[in-house]
Length: 472
Image (cartoon, rainbow, N blue to C red; front, side, top):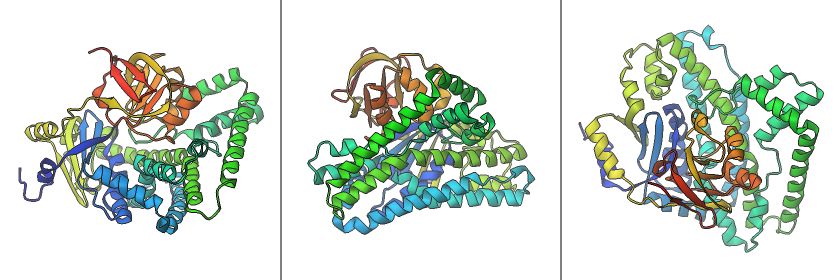
């Protein structure tokens, strides 16, 4: 392999730690590239280095330069803690709000792709990528490092132990509960089933390869709501947010308006309310992209899943007829590395090189430890959920081990005995729902899905934030 222009020397010269793991496509990897390579470095004056994405059978594990993780966390902490950042934080709040609105409007405008020429279809894809790059910072901003840094900054300023607990309360219904409220509306006053389905047909489509929201799922949820009394459910949801709002307003009333702590609390509260809505709008965006890619897939006689593992430039070349043989994509999806730094992208598929990188990245520390989201201690069997494609494996009482959880995971979470995630802070979906369900939950382990396997007998000690394997 020619190494003069390769990123490989930087890989072997550095130390890396696992950041997250999930079943995902290159189309989702592309969503975060711009933020990691350009937006974050511009905000914090730090180069986040080479990003590694290890692909095995459609499961992608992301690795981050180890020395840069604490540096990034410190830079973010200093940014949030400093009163000198006040104007930029205000800009971020405005940016997030504007970006969410723009992305939502962009996502609901869907052309009939089958009516477009190849030239116009290509323009649609290129425009899609351009728009998402503009919003990539917003997507990345709502990720783990920002949440942890913001949490630590608030803790360092305020000694009020209840402050973050109260701030974590949503004052606006999350998308899943709006979905439940809409089902109640359907049962109580005539919102049609078709209107309901069309409103949520993107639900759970965080990535283009995720399973589609089905009419069968909608029918199941409607029947379930009938049994629970829709009027009562509607009242309970509305009451919860009314009570949350009162608590949060009372908290803000005792903090001096205009103080730096007040600003951080405003950002935290905004962040808390918008985090799940960011995902909901991102699902709309993914749904739109999936329709576009399905059209390209049909025209170019390439499977939809293989197409989703082409890079942006390769999809453009495919539509323009510059490449026709994409047989190597199957191998790429099965076993490869995707490396990126700034504008340089490299895909590694050679078996010998893959083995060398794997050996370099091997994690000798198999201790699984994270942050406690909901206390408790339980033993049970592991069920690894890397996406909604794994839901069929779940059995009642299993311990869910996932990169993160999403609204479509909720029925399984309710039937689990505990929840463990690689990612997440106190505002994560898993943390919030585990507290509602009173399920032991450990978040932010980084490696749980890598170290554990389906069927492993483990103890989730959500008093200490440790997961112990009880069987080999």
